[in-house]
Length: 155
Image 1 (cartoon, rainbow, N blue to C red):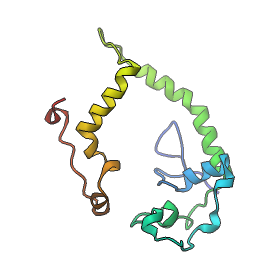
Image 2: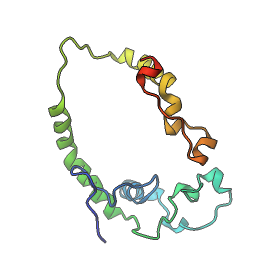
Image 3: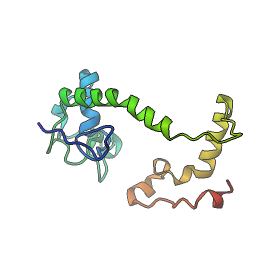
């Protein structure tokens, strides 16, 4: 089994990017909750349509990426290795972020009470440009509205 270094220096996975329910997520789940993973289901038909179970052009039923299981299979050992790497490096990531922070004179951070209002304003202005909020037709066709920029939205 070979674990590849990712394109990032801080955390690694077994590839540059891993799909939802791909090897990385599944390996982590196998490490933490092996009782929730059943690899014997790979490639087996479902009793419900794949459109209901999460399948589409990119994913098979059970939300697994197309071709899942044809390459590297997830294991609890891969999950443990990735988890250890994240734990070992999260402090370094925190230091990098805090080290890059530059205080702005006179800036007052929002309170916890302000946060909900900010989030709702953000979603109202920009929510339709997020791919996760795309309509099913937009997602299936790969056509998403293009974000016009904050100035155009009035912020």
